[in-house]
Image (cartoon, rainbow, N blue to C red; front, side):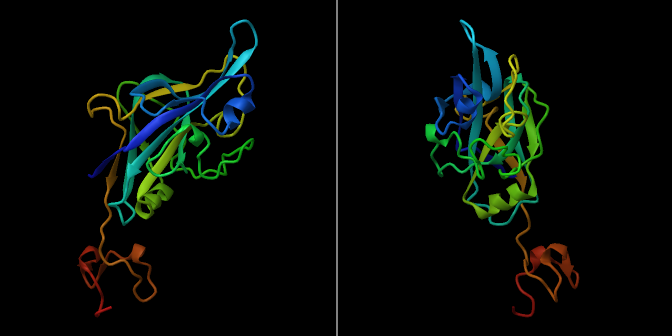
Length: 237
């Protein structure tokens, strides 16, 4: 099974903001963790009591990029694997990021495909997974990527994702005081490779890929007993 290791990752955060809108809908990160090795607050959405009174809001999102230039046919399946690190209270979605290839900076805090400031973005973004509601801090968290993700892995030279908190951040639900949603993880900068963010996938056969007599290639396993993976053309076509 082929494996892709992230070529770029990090967290972008807006912390200690006085309003939910300021924390969630700002267009630029207040703090960046592009070279962070691991973080207890890679994905956050919370509201806390502030020192001296009042409250503060915190939002953090994790971004990753993978080189998929070698994939030309949508994989049969793919699993995103993120190694957990302290904190598992934030449920999350894997969504499509729109940051520039090979570049991640503070201005990418809201670089999420389909994002609209101030809106419930649950239906606006491109989701690459089901909601992730359990998180382990003692190993890899295996997240199944959906068919949309598989198609984009084949169509794009870089596969870019954001891990975003699903109960408050994505739908724009302001949390109440004392709500703490924080999930931690390792990034590729951490020493060694045993905790690197990776994608394991099953490569699809690259055989004959056209319709035959009106039948979609997706529904054809073989032609006259020959597997489609072993067919380059039919009657010279």
